[in-house]
Length: 145
Image 1 (spheres, rainbow, N blue to C red):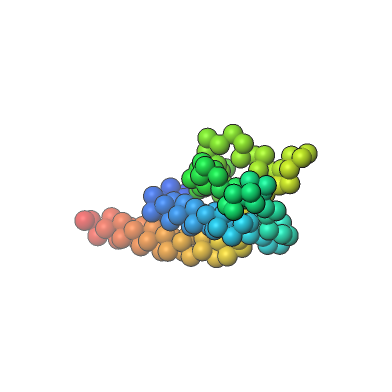
Image 2 (image 1 turned 90 degrees about the vertical axis):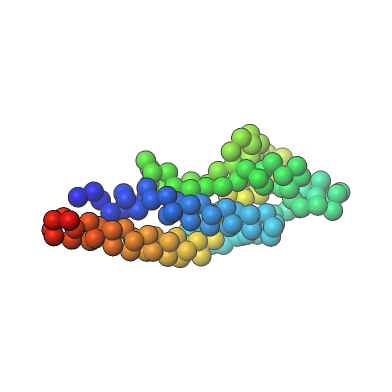
C-alpha cells in the first residue's frame, strides 16, 4: 500500500492550501516591515531598518517596484520533503534576505511559528480525506464492487 504521507504530500488541495498560507504569511512580512520571532521559523530579533529610499519617498522598505513582493512564495519540495520559501526571478533577493557588507539583512522569507499549527491543521484535514478514500476503496474491493 502506498505510504499515506506520500499521498498527502502529492494532494493538490493540500499543496494549494499550504502555498496559500505561505504566501499570506510572507505578504504580512512586507506589510509589517518584518516579523520576527525566536522560534523555528522566525527571522531574528527586530523589525527591518527602514531603507533610505523608503524614508526619502515615504514608502515601505523592500517595496519599490513590487517585483520582490509579487515574486515571494513557497510550497513543498516533494523530493526533499521540506518547505521551500522563494522569490522567483528576483536576482537581488538574496542580498536583501541575507544582507551585504554595506547593507543590513532584511529577512523576508520567514514564517511565524503559528504557521506550524496551520500546516498541521491542513495536514490533518487532508489525511482524514485520504484515509476515508482508502477505507472506501478497501471496502469496495472487499465487497466486490
